[in-house]
Image (cartoon, rainbow, N blue to C red):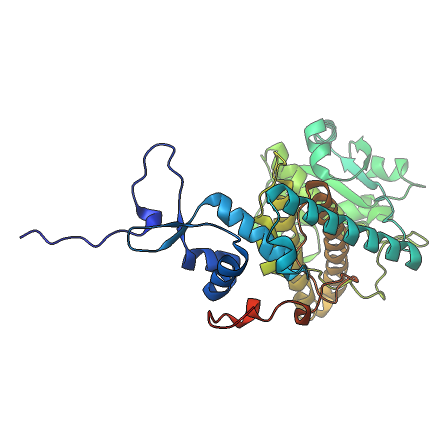
Amino acid sequence: MKKRQPPRPPSQQPRGAGEPTLHRSGAVARMLGMPVATLRVWERRYGLTQPRLSPSGQRLYSADDLRRLALVKQLTDLGHAIGSVACLDMPQLQHVAATHARTVAATHKEKDERSGAADVPPVRAWRLAVIGAALGIRLQRPAILRRLGRPVVLLGPFDDAAQATAALRSSHIDALLIHEPNLHAGWLASIDAAAPALAGAPKAVLYGFAADAVCEALATAGTALLREPQPDAVLAQWLHGLSMVATPPQPGESTSMRPTEPAPPRRWDDAALIGFAGQSSTVACECPRHVAELLVQLSHFEAYSAECEHRNAADAELHAHLGRVAAASRARFEAALEHVALHEGLLLPPSPGAHGVSVAPPARRPKALTAARPGQRP
């Protein structure tokens, strides 16, 4: 006799064309981060959703049910009473969310104005001297300049180090970029001898051929190396990395975050950002998700830089600078996320105690929402 197969769960049931996907109550509760019992309390007391029933009596929720429940859950987490939002339809819930987002944004703006917070000043142009005619012409391509992500002043190109020294006698440069098809032992010493005024400038070399020992010696001396041929995208990415570490703040230059100023704390942890990234949005390019993911990456790099700062004394200053840049970038992207959420009417992740965000304490919410036992009264 052929053994009978057990019934498949609703999410695995074969569906006809156009038939919606249905989810069981346990799966819905896990996705929303709430007890199943609380979901039942909401349905029994407030009629929040009307799930279908499977032949075996399992409650099944549609995608529309899930979106409505998710928005109600977010609003209650922010302090809105379940009794005041359960009776609202989806457009009304979205209006409440948008009003909440605008109120939070206005509160932040007022606080910043009172504290006199200044906008981050524009990035100073990177002054790059170039030795090598072919490389100088290539660097003028719009595709490379766009990928650099900051204004660049190209000085040159010059034929050799002596010509560069004569032309740059009274000019400040941030870095010296050299195209050298063949690197040999003693190459760096010959460059410094021909251009002593440029000996202290950070150097980067795009080269064709070199022995491993020569490359090791140059790298030890702090020279950045990239072997050609490389596409424009790789060359631009390499130069972008150099520009971030080779341009320390100049004397008297305004900066958004000085070394003695503590980095602002994170407003949202990874879990909150991932949850926000999963919210639906009408932005075609999915900006809310992308900004949230960028914030996760920036926060991780900020933490990584802080750890590296104590591993090597010689690199401490570099890693401290990278950590400050990452922290400043994270703070700006947190403001950008707030702007996107306000534009889209999305609820920002709750961030108790950070940047003055006001989140109602749990005591204001009905205890049944967290007690999670069907026998209790909400």
